[in-house]
Length: 193
Ligand code: VGL
Ligand code: ZN
Image 1 (cartoon, rainbow, N blue to C red):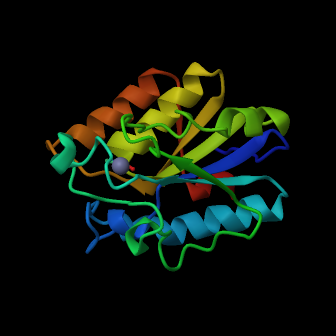
Image 2 (tube, rainbow, N blue to C red):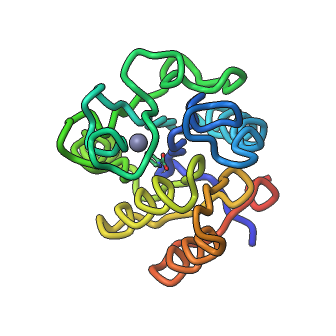
């Protein structure tokens, strides 16, 4: 399906950070494969003059999502560490809006809207449609997509620019199904070009 990028559109890149890439603290299998397509989305949105937002998982040392603090995950994306930095090779323009999430010790935040200014920044700019991709499909991408749908945005899920952890096999497939059932639409680079 062809989709034309309009003045109501923004690109949202979710958590493309070193700790989520192969070799990182919480590696997403094939997570590195999102970098090239995302660079193409970035170039595309930049050429249309449309805004780009990049969320990052931004945990304090004592964050509740870490196993040592009773959570599910190995320690990852600790604020200001190398692992929390964006993937090498991800070509974020200097005017990218950086959205930190999961920065309160006691709260897990899988959605880029949770406890952040993302919604107000988008509203201020008249954004109505979001193109969302990144890591991980079955956690932060899914929750950001569902959060956006709840807030009334039209959402395109960027299939070719997202990868999931699939802790239980089938999680990624189910996450995609849920996003589509709730109203998201799949899109790839070919649909935009
Ligand atoms: C994520 C697990 C824990 C994600 C973040 O970005 O999908 N997953 N923290
Ligand atoms: Zn996290």
